[in-house]
Amino acid sequence: MYKTMYRGIAFVEGTIPGAQILEPYRVSLGFRFGAQLKNLRDVKDKFVEAALRCGANAVLDFTYGQKSRLFAIDDVAYWGKGLLGIPPPEELAQIPPG
Image 1 (cartoon, rainbow, N blue to C red):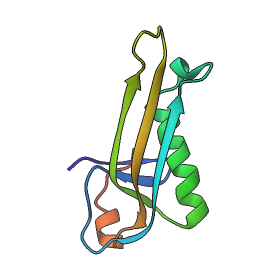
Image 2: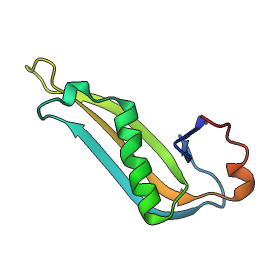
Image 3: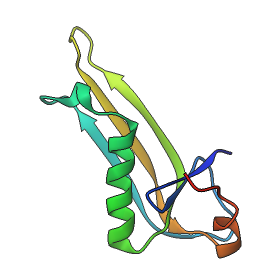
């Protein structure tokens, strides 16, 4: 399971036992002008904003990727989904700083 910190929020590609789940969250960036300039950092920035709004300090079960439209040039959308939550402090302390 991959774990990393980004702007003070833990991103975990899996679950952490004992974590409090606050709400699911998903984001899709793309299929509009300038979308090809977006990347994973932009997806994570949206998650950080959402986490801070609801009092979470982690994104659990985080998955992300990109998709493109058939027959389109430079038309890519980056997406992400996960659960905003609060893991136990001892689990959070084990995640290396980003």
